[in-house]
Length: 395
Image 1 (cartoon, rainbow, N blue to C red):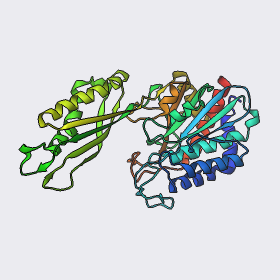
Image 2: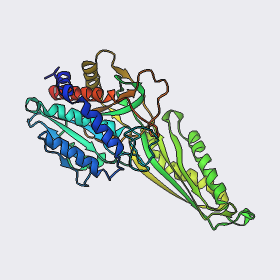
Image 3: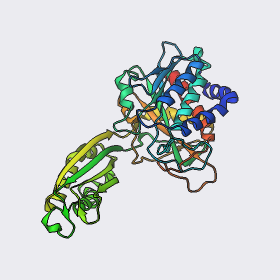
Image 4: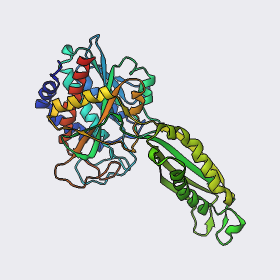
């Protein structure tokens, strides 16, 4: 079975490749937010049961796992995330999101369709597999600390020998897979700073707490201070995504809030960040007399790809797609809860090229216009099937 992966994938794709696009577009048109992926889960359960498999829904009611094969050999896990983002789909396409304010702007519809295709391809040869391939359709990747912890807590990783996953990369052309041994993403945490004061009239800021000015000081001063208090090589970056204060132009509000994400490449800097953020905020607001409440929520550690698993993945990419398909990639400041799996089992996440050939300026992830070249769906199936078969044989 060592070199059979591409043949297994191609045999299924020969008569089912069109289904990948149908599934992906169905998911794209009906996206569901984290912890609400009920229709997505039901669709996957139905299709897997049609193939004679026995999927098991996770305890919270969304997401599922499904073993392919019944042998006593090793267990290799393939994972996809199934949740969408709270963003408006801005594309003018037939499969545009029908859910206001929700869309698959991170490519999780692609990940899900690819994993479903890989599972169905492997199901066609389940009796020949030298072990089991466990499909994990994970909920709530977009939340912190992420649905991966549910899968781990429910014991679905403890018997695994390896785990693999793909994530869309709009900077890579279709047919290319980005790989990197070691850290490939960053740690990502959530930060909220809430300031309060007595409020007052904008004509007399000296008689109260000028809350908006204090909030602005924190908004600009905290990222600036962190850049001078943390080793630049740690790559720490704090970016605000939400700022809110007041409702009237001539009234100083009693409350204001900043919400954002703190991302960092270095583990030691990540561990020190919560206390440092609180200390700097206190110092910034002290002159104004505002009360500061900092909510610092741990998100995810960096995804650190295992060296051997990454080498196996790269070899599988070359076997499935041909020489030159596996290309080096760099560590990003993006966060991914795939990292929690890698604390328990060796594995690797790779980047799936989804950029159409000839497109020089692709749209980035987490944008309402984000879309993919659907040729990447079959590419992903070939890669995951080949990697799973190779890992089963190597274990």
